Image 1: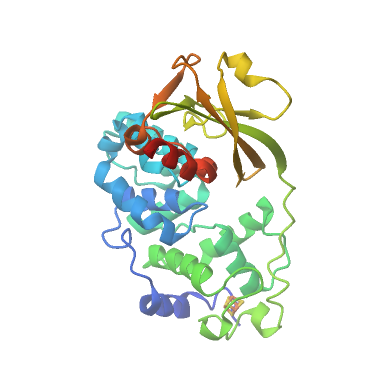
Image 2: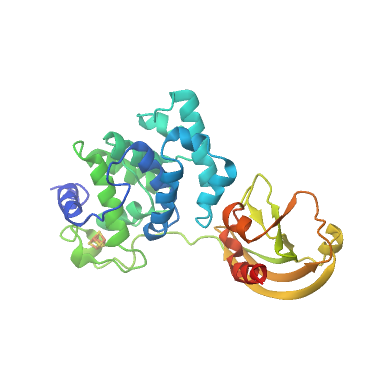
Length: 347
Ligand code: SF4
C-alpha cells in the first residue's frame, strides 16, 4: 500500500490543472521571471505582489538590465514590499550572473543555489519550473501540507523536519512535471490547506488519504514551535519641515532597512536630539505609529518641527512632494506619518 504522500502526485496534478490561478509569472516561466516572482512572494501575498511584479519587469526586463539598474530606482521599485535586502540581493545575483555566467541564468540546482539571496526553496522552484529538474521546493506552505497529509507530529520549524519532507518529496516528484507538482503544492497550501486550523478539506484532492483529515487532527497539525517574542522599541520620529520640504536621512548601509531614506528617528531615551543635530524651531506632537518587523516592533511617536533654518546635519536632504514620490524610497514603517507629511507639503 502506498503511503499517503506517495498517493498524492496524480490527484494533485489533476486538481492543479483545473484550479491553478492565472498569474503573470506562470505564463512564459523563464528562470528570470520565476526568480523575481518567488523573491517577491517571500513574506508577501500574491495580490500585493502583482503590481510590483509588473512594474519591476517593465523597468528591468532582463538580468542585464537589473544588474545595471541605479540603486535609488531599485529601492523605489521595491518601496512598500518590505525586506529590502531581497532587492539588493536580486541585483547582486544579477551582477554575478552577468560576470560569471555571461548573462545567462545558470541551469543547475547547485549553480542557482549559489547565487546571493537564493535558498533551498527558491533554487528548487526555479530549477523545477524553469528548467524541468525534479527538485522539491519546500517552504512553510508545503511543510504544512506534508505534515497534515502524513500526520507527522514533527515540528515544521526545525531543519530536521524540512530535510525529512524534502527527502520524501524528492522520491515522488514526477519527472515529467516537476514544476507543476511544486506549484500545485504551493497552490494547495495557499488556497485550500490553509493555516490555523482552517483547511478546506472538502475541496482537497488529498482528502481521501490525508491522515490529518481522516483522523480529525487538522487543528493539531502541523506542530510549530512558538516564535520568540519581538523586542519592542519606543522611538521618536522627527518630521522636520522647512518651507515646502521635509527632511530625510539615509539609513546605514547595513542592517534593518539598509540604505533607505527615513524621517530621522531615534530611541526615546531622553537625549535632546534636536540640540545634538543643531536644529531649532517650533515643535508640536505629530501622532503615533507602529510597525512590526520580523524581530522588532517599533512604537513611534512623531514630533513635528518647523525648522528655523534650512541647514541640515550632514547626509540629510530636503525633499519636496515630487522628490518624495519619485526619488526617495521611504519604507512602509513610516506609513502612519505619510498622510501628515503629504498634507503639510501640499499646504
Ligand atoms: S485534506 Fe485537509 S488537511 Fe489534508 S491536505 Fe487537504 S486540506 Fe489539508
